[in-house]
Image 1 (cartoon, rainbow, N blue to C red):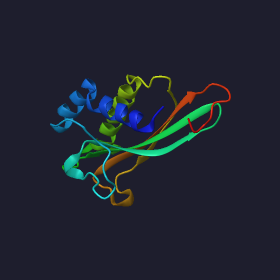
Image 2 (image 1 turned 135 degrees about the vertical axis):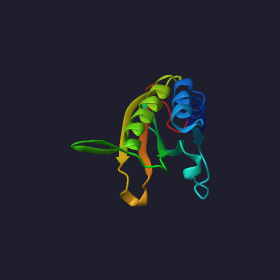
Image 3 (image 1 turned 120 degrees about the horizontal axis):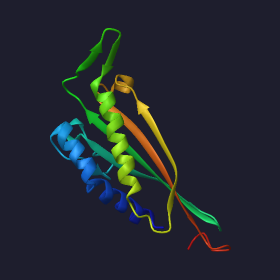
Image 4 (image 1 turned 180 degrees about the vertical axis):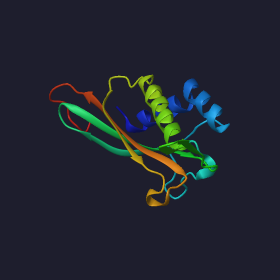
Length: 157
């Protein structure tokens, strides 16, 4: 598995996913944008909804190659609406973020990674107001892809 090829497959798969695009158009009047930008030119609130991909790790031994990809997903709700009930207050963007992440996961399931398979998935939610993110709604996602090798293969191949 080549990390650049895998990253490109993920970018194309997320950018072209019809269900994800439809959801973004319905909720934000524009399609998602998928980035693998220079760290000096990161997406801003004007680019939301976005998915920012990042290469994290590519390691191998005689038996397996492991690639780790990170994603920063963000929604921006400028008109911060509060959904109220007599005893409940919640940020509307928080529930939207769950939907956004579910659609990203569904899109990832539809990507063909060849001999690789997703072996681990993790999502780290940042609550509005943490780290001056408000009214950003952010989730950091990590996926690990594994590919088994023939016994005795050189990990540098």
